[in-house]
Amino acid sequence: MNILDAQKDMRYGFFGGGVGMFVSGIAWLLSGIVALNGETNQAIWALLIGGALISPISGIFTKVLGRPDNATPGNPLMSLAMEGTAWLIFCLPLTYAISQMNSLWFFPAMLLVIGGRYLTFSTMFGMRIYWVCGLLLAAASVALVMLNVPFSIQPFVGALIEIVLAPFVFTQGRKEGKLPT
Image (cartoon, rainbow, N blue to C red):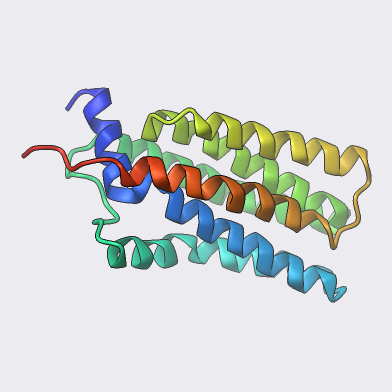
Protein backbone atom coordinates (compact mmCIF):
# COMPACT_ATOMS: atom_id res chain seq x y z
CA MET A 1 0.00 0.00 0.00
CA ASN A 2 1.54 3.34 -1.01
CA ILE A 3 1.25 6.46 1.18
CA LEU A 4 -1.58 8.01 -0.84
CA ASP A 5 -3.66 4.83 -0.65
CA ALA A 6 -2.89 4.50 3.07
CA GLN A 7 -4.06 8.08 3.67
CA LYS A 8 -7.18 7.53 1.58
CA ASP A 9 -7.92 4.40 3.60
CA MET A 10 -7.51 6.36 6.86
CA ARG A 11 -9.81 9.13 5.61
CA TYR A 12 -12.41 6.56 4.61
CA GLY A 13 -12.25 4.48 7.79
CA PHE A 14 -12.38 7.40 10.22
CA PHE A 15 -14.24 10.12 8.24
CA GLY A 16 -10.90 11.88 8.08
CA GLY A 17 -10.87 12.06 11.87
CA GLY A 18 -13.71 14.58 11.91
CA VAL A 19 -15.92 12.60 14.27
CA GLY A 20 -13.06 12.25 16.76
CA MET A 21 -12.25 15.96 16.50
CA PHE A 22 -15.88 16.85 17.22
CA VAL A 23 -16.06 14.49 20.21
CA SER A 24 -12.80 15.98 21.48
CA GLY A 25 -14.31 19.45 21.16
CA ILE A 26 -17.29 18.29 23.22
CA ALA A 27 -14.89 17.01 25.92
CA TRP A 28 -13.29 20.47 26.02
CA LEU A 29 -16.75 22.05 26.18
CA LEU A 30 -17.86 19.87 29.09
CA SER A 31 -14.63 20.62 30.92
CA GLY A 32 -15.32 24.32 30.38
CA ILE A 33 -18.81 24.00 31.83
CA VAL A 34 -17.33 22.37 34.93
CA ALA A 35 -14.66 25.11 35.10
CA LEU A 36 -17.36 27.81 35.00
CA ASN A 37 -18.64 26.40 38.28
CA GLY A 38 -15.28 27.11 39.86
CA GLU A 39 -14.34 23.46 40.12
CA THR A 40 -10.68 23.56 39.05
CA ASN A 41 -9.66 19.99 39.82
CA GLN A 42 -12.96 18.61 38.55
CA ALA A 43 -12.54 20.55 35.27
CA ILE A 44 -9.08 19.05 34.84
CA TRP A 45 -10.41 15.57 35.49
CA ALA A 46 -13.38 16.21 33.19
CA LEU A 47 -10.97 16.83 30.31
CA LEU A 48 -8.75 13.87 31.21
CA ILE A 49 -11.69 11.47 31.50
CA GLY A 50 -13.45 12.99 28.49
CA GLY A 51 -10.22 12.62 26.52
CA ALA A 52 -10.01 8.95 27.44
CA LEU A 53 -13.53 8.48 26.07
CA ILE A 54 -12.92 10.20 22.70
CA SER A 55 -11.86 7.05 20.87
CA PRO A 56 -14.66 4.75 22.03
CA ILE A 57 -17.38 7.39 21.64
CA SER A 58 -16.20 8.55 18.22
CA GLY A 59 -15.84 4.90 17.21
CA ILE A 60 -19.49 4.26 17.98
CA PHE A 61 -20.61 7.33 16.03
CA THR A 62 -18.33 6.51 13.10
CA LYS A 63 -19.81 3.01 12.86
CA VAL A 64 -23.37 4.34 13.19
CA LEU A 65 -22.59 6.70 10.30
CA GLY A 66 -21.52 3.74 8.16
CA ARG A 67 -17.74 3.65 8.34
CA PRO A 68 -15.60 0.92 9.92
CA ASP A 69 -13.72 3.09 12.49
CA ASN A 70 -10.62 1.24 11.42
CA ALA A 71 -8.17 1.05 8.59
CA THR A 72 -7.55 -1.84 6.26
CA PRO A 73 -5.33 -4.43 7.96
CA GLY A 74 -1.71 -3.72 7.13
CA ASN A 75 -2.21 0.03 6.69
CA PRO A 76 1.19 1.38 7.80
CA LEU A 77 -0.33 4.65 9.05
CA MET A 78 -2.04 2.81 11.90
CA SER A 79 1.41 2.62 13.49
CA LEU A 80 1.61 6.41 13.41
CA ALA A 81 -1.83 6.58 15.02
CA MET A 82 -0.71 4.27 17.83
CA GLU A 83 2.55 6.18 18.31
CA GLY A 84 0.65 9.46 18.55
CA THR A 85 -1.69 7.94 21.11
CA ALA A 86 1.26 6.68 23.15
CA TRP A 87 2.84 10.16 23.03
CA LEU A 88 -0.40 11.72 24.25
CA ILE A 89 -0.70 9.24 27.11
CA PHE A 90 2.95 9.79 28.08
CA CYS A 91 2.28 13.56 28.30
CA LEU A 92 -0.76 13.29 30.57
CA PRO A 93 1.17 12.83 33.85
CA LEU A 94 3.28 15.86 32.96
CA THR A 95 0.26 18.06 32.19
CA TYR A 96 -1.37 16.95 35.42
CA ALA A 97 1.82 17.70 37.40
CA ILE A 98 1.93 21.13 35.77
CA SER A 99 -1.64 21.73 36.91
CA GLN A 100 -0.64 20.97 40.48
CA MET A 101 2.03 23.68 40.31
CA ASN A 102 -0.21 26.22 38.55
CA SER A 103 -3.72 25.32 37.44
CA LEU A 104 -3.64 28.11 34.82
CA TRP A 105 -1.10 26.09 32.86
CA PHE A 106 -3.08 22.84 32.56
CA PHE A 107 -5.28 23.71 29.58
CA PRO A 108 -2.47 25.47 27.68
CA ALA A 109 -0.25 22.41 28.23
CA MET A 110 -3.01 20.14 26.93
CA LEU A 111 -3.54 22.40 23.91
CA LEU A 112 0.15 22.07 23.06
CA VAL A 113 0.14 18.29 23.43
CA ILE A 114 -3.02 17.85 21.39
CA GLY A 115 -1.91 20.43 18.83
CA GLY A 116 1.32 18.49 18.33
CA ARG A 117 -0.65 15.31 17.86
CA TYR A 118 -2.83 16.93 15.23
CA LEU A 119 0.29 17.84 13.25
CA THR A 120 0.93 14.10 12.81
CA PHE A 121 -2.68 13.69 11.65
CA SER A 122 -1.74 15.75 8.59
CA THR A 123 0.51 12.88 7.49
CA MET A 124 -1.83 10.18 8.73
CA PHE A 125 -4.89 11.46 6.86
CA GLY A 126 -3.16 13.46 4.13
CA MET A 127 -5.11 16.58 5.10
CA ARG A 128 -3.44 19.97 5.53
CA ILE A 129 -6.27 21.22 7.72
CA TYR A 130 -4.58 19.33 10.55
CA TRP A 131 -1.62 21.72 10.28
CA VAL A 132 -4.09 24.58 10.70
CA CYS A 133 -5.70 22.88 13.69
CA GLY A 134 -2.39 22.00 15.35
CA LEU A 135 -0.98 25.47 14.87
CA LEU A 136 -4.18 27.15 16.08
CA LEU A 137 -4.14 25.03 19.24
CA ALA A 138 -0.45 25.82 19.83
CA ALA A 139 -0.98 29.55 19.24
CA ALA A 140 -4.01 29.49 21.55
CA SER A 141 -1.88 27.81 24.21
CA VAL A 142 0.70 30.58 24.09
CA ALA A 143 -1.99 33.29 24.00
CA LEU A 144 -3.78 31.86 27.04
CA VAL A 145 -0.58 32.02 29.07
CA MET A 146 0.62 35.39 27.75
CA LEU A 147 -2.79 37.02 28.27
CA ASN A 148 -3.33 35.33 31.64
CA VAL A 149 -6.80 34.18 30.53
CA PRO A 150 -8.95 32.99 33.44
CA PHE A 151 -9.02 29.24 34.03
CA SER A 152 -12.79 29.02 33.49
CA ILE A 153 -12.50 30.46 29.95
CA GLN A 154 -9.52 28.42 28.75
CA PRO A 155 -11.21 25.12 27.84
CA PHE A 156 -13.72 26.93 25.65
CA VAL A 157 -10.85 27.96 23.37
CA GLY A 158 -9.98 24.32 22.66
CA ALA A 159 -13.67 23.51 22.24
CA LEU A 160 -14.17 26.35 19.78
CA ILE A 161 -11.20 25.44 17.60
CA GLU A 162 -12.08 21.75 17.38
CA ILE A 163 -15.85 22.15 17.02
CA VAL A 164 -15.45 24.77 14.27
CA LEU A 165 -12.89 22.73 12.30
CA ALA A 166 -14.52 19.30 12.77
CA PRO A 167 -17.23 19.75 10.09
CA PHE A 168 -14.58 20.66 7.49
CA VAL A 169 -12.53 17.58 8.40
CA PHE A 170 -15.63 15.37 8.46
CA THR A 171 -16.82 16.64 5.08
CA GLN A 172 -13.47 15.94 3.48
CA GLY A 173 -13.40 12.45 4.99
CA ARG A 174 -17.01 11.78 4.02
CA LYS A 175 -16.17 12.32 0.34
CA GLU A 176 -13.63 9.51 0.48
CA GLY A 177 -14.49 6.20 -1.14
CA LYS A 178 -13.31 2.80 -0.01
CA LEU A 179 -10.14 1.43 -1.61
CA PRO A 180 -10.73 -1.35 -4.12
CA THR A 181 -9.85 -4.73 -2.65
